[in-house]
Length: 214
Image (cartoon, rainbow, N blue to C red; front, side, top):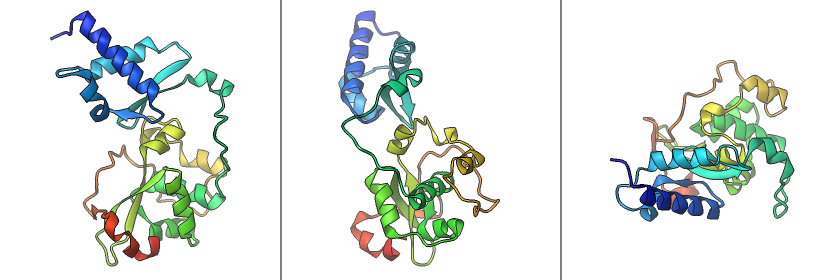
């Protein structure tokens, strides 16, 4: 049943206000309480997306969440003056790229792909940036922690989903990956973030025993 125009317009305004006020992308579970029972969230999102399609800011999808971001053709005009970002070290860039394409990945698996040891500080840097997270534990001896990317990673790099990641050759050309990568490393299928069959949920209480961050 179609919502009366007045009700839908109010829901659109609420949705618009919430998304504008948030620095981070918001998902349906965060927005639903403000829209009322029976709100057609997909229809509202599509209506709002179309409303902003030709404006200076557009409604974009980041994983299963939504956010207003500067239109792509105008992004070069704006810079976040309130944040000074330092280029990531090469080790962090390679580690991030491997996790993005090979997740869920353990520290040992990252080291196997890179061919060199990965310091715990590298993983800490990426977690502090909010781009990777501890997903779970591999069901293998030692139960190493597995790492994966976050919605913040998608948002920062302007990706709707992991399926939008550039090809490996593009990453190599940009200097983000070395020539040491094995030929078997492939772009993943669309990934929903759910635990895999060989993973157990990660318990933050036992983080200190995660084989020194592996």
